[in-house]
Image (cartoon, rainbow, N blue to C red; front, side, top):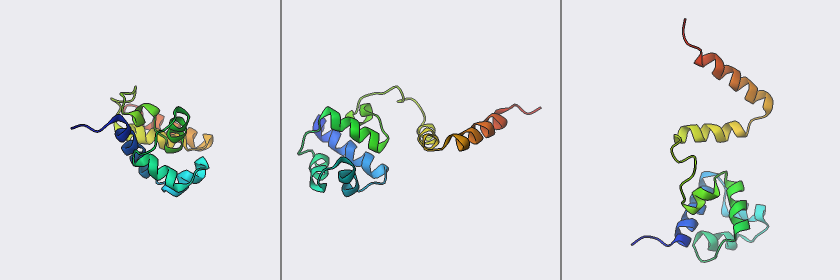
Length: 111
């Protein structure tokens, strides 16, 4: 028997929150909710609005497609590359430029 779409969403929301290193209380505070509301959502006992889905996506750094269990354009991208991209997205421009310069140096063919 397969899980319902609501249950799959609830499980993915919990997994994304844990991967982001956040507690239910922290997410509730960010969203201006009470912690039991997040618990109810993650248990699949409370529906999630489209607006909330977008907010969860932003907080957790995942796509709404992933939260919904739908294929996305990044489905065939290696997980290590996606993780690197997320970390690069957190860098300031100066550090990012240094990393790009380093990568350009590393990828040059040996002569």
